[in-house]
Length: 155
View (cartoon, one colour):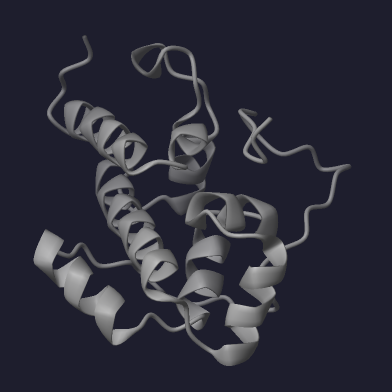
């Protein structure tokens, strides 16, 4: 079973381990082109971007590690080293692109987008968008749904 679950909102009685003690910030992910993602991943992605994106999307360490397709221990090691490897960096940049698109669609409301990621959608065969982000194809499918919402195409 995947570490990513499809729940509409986290229960206040449950506490989830967060990605470090990142101060509230005005961090807003920027959309990059395909070649931009490749170049950034090759140059190296800073581990602090993981923390910023996790905080923005209200994601736990376990959820981020699952999306990046790495173990939690590996995530801790990357955070100590200060940067991600190329494959994890590319996945983080894909998540950042998706977040930039989601914030555009949800009028900058990161809380609404974070909740949408956890809500099962008929268009995704009843799965939550977050559950599909374990594959590159899943990123594409979720981005397609955001595009349909953006342009008012609901069927």
